[in-house]
Amino acid sequence: MDDLMNRSMVTLQDTFTSTWGFLYTRNSQLFQDLYQDLKDYYRSASVNLEEVLNEFWTKLLEKLFYQANKQSSIDEDYQECVSKKIETLRLFGEAPHKMTIQVTRTFVAARAFLQGLQTSREVVGKVLQVPLSQKCVGAIMRMTYCPHCRGMPTAKPCANYCSNVMKGCLANQADLHTEWSHLADTMIEVGERRLDDVESVILYLPNQISEAMFSMMDNMETINSKLFQACGSLSEGGATGSGFEDITSRRRVVVDDRLGGSVTKMAKSVSDVNMKLREIRPYWVSLPKVLCSDRVASGTGAEDKCWNGMNRARYLPEVIGDGLASQINNPEVEIDITKPDMKIRQQIMQLKIMTHRLKNALNGQDVDFQDTSDDVSGSGSGMCTDDICSRGPRLVAPVTEPPRVYAYPPRNKEVRGSASQSLPSFSILLLSLLILLLRR
Image 1 (cartoon, rainbow, N blue to C red):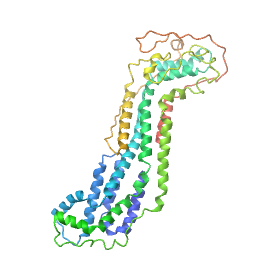
Image 2 (image 1 turned 90 degrees about the vertical axis):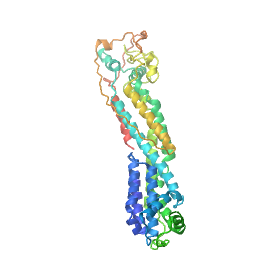
Image 3 (image 1 turned 120 degrees about the vertical axis):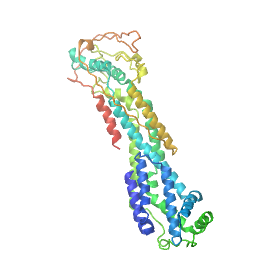
Image 4 (image 1 turned 135 degrees about the horizontal axis):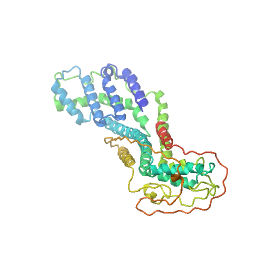
């Protein structure tokens, strides 16, 4: 985006210098301020985009009016009258209105899209700080290291056993899925509907501005007539168009063809980001499957020879659902489903806020961007003690419910396998998502 803005500004400087001459060079700061305001807005500065554009057109028309009537004496009262009438007489025709709509829709969408990525990154960072519960740490230790303690170092955890452990440990994280997927879907829609022509809007700003200026110059007699009628005649009558004789022969500004390559580059960037958004859409509910890959858990065909939490045998309980509410029936991790993690609930709210902002951006509406930050820290640890490694009756959350006992078939014959297994780091897996969001 910054590259497009810089290229557009270079084009304006080059073409306006040769086309508008001293009229541009004397007022170049006006155009530079416009581009800077647009950049600041995109970077989330507190800028009212509509006010910026309206102010630009008002000041530009004043400059052109004074240039056209430079042989006349214009006092402060007359200048004030002209400034007021400029806003109502639409002296540039439809060009300002058209450009304002295009720029507003494009920049509101682009900024919201960027903030959507930033929010996603921040949510991941906050979730990384949420510690695993002691019950979860104990369940992971039991699943990962108890085979060693029982003399079965080659036994991998049963796949469904691993899934239940990780779904219990990541129950609160899984509740991010609904709002996370809503955010991803809305960002994809913004990218496809509002950022498809971002290059043309930015690169052709010089064309639109110059065409509006030429339109005013061509109609200066009519414009002067309107202003003279509203504000009174100038002291010496003015000389219609007298300030434009050296410009009429140069006429139109054309965008340099060398900028055309940026169009496909920008479109491809948006397309690539949308593709990655589709890939990470199910991220939070897919974590248990990723964590319980064949490298960690037993694969197909070894269901009767895997570690089921008590011995090497088939794992009988069914795989439970995703999210905190489903954990009431989790046989592996004791969870109180009435006590959701508040840090993660805060991140769910951030996702909702950002999705709402993106939906407004689809309609060209902008709202104040909100952000909250909270520091969460903590850690969990566990050891392979007799308490952890013993498999007795499981207490099912909430703790007020009676315990449930799950029967397991007799121990099966040991099979050959890896000499050691280790559970992938949860933080590393979440960090991979953060890297994916940053590489765009």
